[in-house]
Image 1 (cartoon, protein in one colour):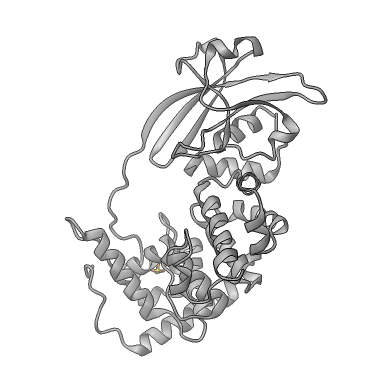
Image 2: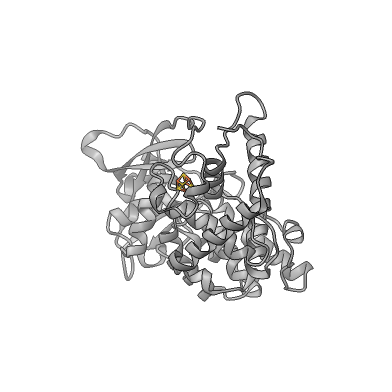
Length: 366
Ligand code: SF4
């Protein structure tokens, strides 16, 4: 292991060889994903935001739906926020959708509806950080800038045997070293493809727990050829909560009781959820289902109780505006990931393959 220093003896022939091998591997092995067919910066932007913290399989269909509904920045900017959040439902981390929407409005209001082209300018838009700006600029405009996501960081750390040193600043120093290394490596002729190739290698070959070194195009230049030491992950916390599932006969279809989270709360403001029960300890014979739902570092163990309309006031805590919503309408609302999960498992929402994938995803990270 070499600590944090990027090795000064990196010869350009070695870098040229790594670029050549990685790009050749990418040309033959890359997955054909819808956003890779486009050089439209807006489409690339949408895909990059969706792909942050969400699996590719989940993103594929949502990306196409999103672009069909909002094909341009102007269309996105003009849409009501609730429509944007509704299309985001199932992807989780709704702040991403809100920031995307705000940035689209910013581009329309202040940039004449045209996205800036360079990574530096792109970072001036709300919600676009160094990673997203570099991804858009390199893929859409061929700017020679490095992109470092979790996959790239893992590949480069293993390649060079980099690890964070103990003590304050160790993780930050590691990040700087990785960005420096990535900037040295990025191919000047095909920066967008190179960046995607490195991310692809991390996603499909240099896997977190089981790196496939025998099929890796960079194995000859890799110092570790396998897993390297990483700081231990923070342990997950556990919480128990309970929600009410209230369904009644409506005019044309059944209706479910939903509650909108206040706009002032910091977590998922404005989204629709099932009302909370006063008591998390639901009697065992009243439990309709239990659901594990992870948000950040917390595992929520959620008990769902069927509550009849007449008992709602006595059993639940009112936290926001409530509405009886036809089930056909609920599917298109901006639901929390947990509400969507529960309604789908209760067979109250249409079960699409997409939902099944999204639920699997949400159980892990949303
Ligand atoms: S050789 Fe193995 S550890 Fe090194 S980059 Fe390739 S897959 Fe990752």
